[in-house]
Every structure is written in structure tokens, then in C-alpha cells.
Amino acid sequence: MPLAAQLTKFGPASESLSVVEISARAPSPGEVALEMLAAPVNPADINVIEGAYGDLPPLPATIGNEGVGRVAEIGAGVGHLQLGQMVLPMAFGTWCARMVVPAADVVPLPDGLDRFQAAMLTVNPATAWRMMHDFVKLAPGDWIVQNAANSGVGRAVIGLARALGWKTLNVVRRESLGDELRAAGADVVVTEECDLRKESKSLCGGVRPRLALNAVGGQSALNIANSLAPRSTMVTYGAMSKQALKIPNGLLIFQELKFEGFWLKRWRERAGNDARQETYAALAAHLKAGTLFTPAHAVFPLARAAEAVAAAGEETRGGKVLLDLSA
Ligand SMILES: NC(=O)c1ccc[n+]([C@@H]2O[C@H](COP(=O)([O-])OP(=O)(O)OC[C@H]3O[C@@H](n4cnc5c(N)ncnc54)[C@H](OP(=O)(O)O)[C@@H]3O)[C@@H](O)[C@H]2O)c1
Image (cartoon, rainbow, N blue to C red):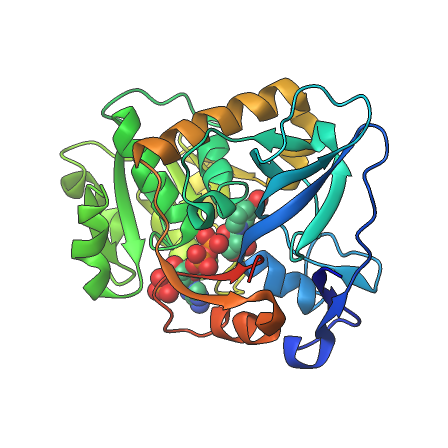
């Protein structure tokens, strides 16, 4: 029987998450069964486990917001997928060895991708890509400023911006990350202590950024908002510091800044199948070309899912914690 990480109540993973056997039902017409390969532990997964997310599943539930699998069985009437093909399920509940989903809800991937990198494609690179395209029309040479630049989203922004000819001003908590992020394609890396109202113009070669991406909130968000050119936009997509936004009235009145929010779940609901396939095809090509790369901190077998969640919550981790779903 295949295994799945099941949440029975909201709270610390050590008390609420257990690994159980699930049935291996055959796909119905229009469905496919996936042999799951890998999934990351993202902040959103931890938020779901703790019961502090925008969308919570009825319990008990197999959890997991993203992952990658191979097509293991094809239901009647499904013509566009092949056995063994690597795919991304656009469905909740990925932390399992086998998953049955509507064939319309999987995105086929090209051959030859690393399964752990592919497992991290659905959420963070897509968030980066949509935020970079849906709010401000940027041209080569334009600057994006972002905090949490060492995060999965932040690294995707750095890689994609470099490939598109856009520039990035990156804010991190630790100075020691500078060389690593510059090697990954970051143009400028500064720490949270840098006063961007004063410094952004000289850091960005005489212009100011036109798009800010905020995953932190509080003082960090204000700092990147202060770095922007007049009539620019800040998109908030995360709240890692758990501090609320404090935006001075003058930034709206005198600078005419726009403040927007982004949630990938809403984009996926609105976008429709064609836009979704187009976005993931572009991202898969960037992954294959090496534009996108997310470092891994540790890989745990599915049976040790609660330990993986604890490791993902550690302040000092150096990359993503992943689950090997085939182990
Ligand atoms: N809205 C959406 O659709 C959407 C989609 C994807 C992600 N997100 C959100 O985006 C954020 C990043 O996700 P991710 O998976 O990319 O993250 P991740 O790879 O797990 O990295 C977390 C990042 O947050 C930083 N961080 C942690 N605590 C912090 C604090 N108190 N103050 C400032 N920075 C802090 C870390 O800094 P260090 O590098 O110094 O450790 C790290 O860079 C999360 O809030 C997540 O929920 C939202």
C-alpha cells in the first residue's frame, strides 16, 4: 500500500502529522494515477499544518502544495499523456507515494529534468514569473527590488530576471549570502540595514526600481517601497516577519506608488488551462536551460515527513528541505 503524510489536526507537525497507508485506487475515466517522486516543504505547507493559511483542507487530509510525479496509470478517455511521463499535479495533497488526479490538472514536463528541481517548479518559480509579468511592463535594463532574496521565490526572480535582461536589487538578512547570490545572477545584493531611500539610485546605476516584490512585511517592506521610482508598484506575496505593512501616506500621494497583493492559487483559478500550460512550459524550459535552480538543504524519505517539516522550520537552513516520495 502506498504511503501518505496525513494531517489529523492543526498544530506542530510532531503532534499533528503522521504517515499512513492509503488505498491505490485505479483512475476513473478522465483521471490519471501518478507515482509521486518528490515534493518540497514550503512555508505555505508549514502554515497549513499550523492552521494559519488562507485556505485550509478539511481534516484528515493528505497535505502538500506541490510536487512532481510520473504517470503510472491512465484512465479511459485520456489521450494526451503517456505512461512514465514526468508531470506536475496542479492539486493539493502531494505528500504521498501515489496520487489520482484529473488528467486536465496535470502539466506535462519535458524529459531530462532533475526530479528534485522539478518538484519545486509549481509554486515559487510560477509566483516569481507571474509577479514579474502581471503588474508592471518591464523592459531590458529595468530594475526589480526584492526582499527575502535568498528564498525560493527570490532566487527564481534573480535567475529569470537575468535571463530576460532585467536587473535585480536584492535584500537579504545575512551579508554572507552576497557572493552566492551574485554568482546566481543577482546584480546588487545588500542587507536589511541598507537605507534604500538614500542608496537605491546609486546602487541601480542612476535609476530607481519600478517593481518591488515583498515577502517579509514590516520595516523591510517599507525599505523596499522607499527605493522605488515614482508611479511604481510593490507586490506583497509573503509575510515572513509576521509584521504588518506600514506605508506612509506620502508614498501614495507624492510618489503615486501602487500596492498590490499576489496569491498563486487565485491566479491558477483565474488563468485557465492555456495560460497555465504556457507559464509552466516557459518555466520548464528555464529549468532545463539552468536559469532556475533552487539549492536543497536536505532530503528526507516520506516516512520522516514530520522531521522534514522541523528541518524546514530551522532558521539556519541553507536551501529547501525536500521529501523523497519514492524512498
Ligand atoms: N503568495 C503566493 O502565491 C506565494 C507563493 C510562493 C511563496 N509565497 C511566500 O513567499 C515567501 C517565501 O517563500 P519561499 O518558499 O520562497 O521561502 P523559502 O525558500 O523557504 O525561504 C524563506 C525566506 O524567508 C526569509 N526569512 C525567514 N524569516 C524571515 C524574517 N523574520 N525576516 C525576513 N526574512 C525572513 C529567509 O531568509 P534567510 O535566507 O536569511 O534564511 C528566506 O530567504 C513565504 O512567505 C511564502 O509563503 C507566497
